[in-house]
Image (cartoon, rainbow, N blue to C red; front, side):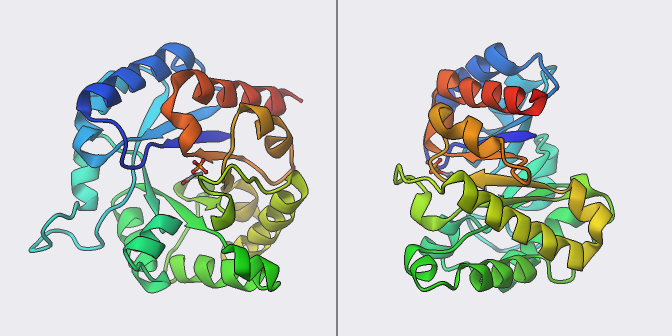
Length: 253
Ligand code: PEP
């Protein structure tokens, strides 16, 4: 199980370090459930020093695919490594929607992250009209294969996938546990056809989209749901820790 918080463009450095300290206080001494937080990039260094010595890992929300160079405003994989990142979220639907990231662009970032020993959290998910039109599987297949183009994964913990139906992100709407399980099982089949069943079995597939303490147990109790990518509910230490507790329970179940 992995519970990762995506803080998006929220918190300044002071608020981010305070939130990180709260998360460490609440869940930083347990190892049963993997926990990560992904603050805005200006706070990575400060949050990383708060997390040091705890079991909570640091992640970034985005990166550029090049090693370095004239890409004003961008951040490279090696820079994320230098501040202690384990994870980087790639292909989030907000990046696709507002910054026009294509599957090819996400694929280039994934290869770059892997080559720098960052674990990409690759986000895939359909929009509401796509689900209504019955094309959710082909959308997710295209996004996943695009993101993994040319990527080699031989050890499952080098990659995390997050299924985030766009219609559930920040809307208060959640996929039902059955809808989540169905798509997660499909994603695992796709991963198996790409990397083999043994590797696919170990790749963590997170659910994201308005997950909170009240619905976490049912979602995390599904066979192929290996954790959550949490937006809004990760901005409070209390609600984030409650989701980690739900993950702990469903792991013990
Ligand atoms: C997200 O954007 O990754 C997300 C899951 O957001 P929320 O939990 O707020 O729906």
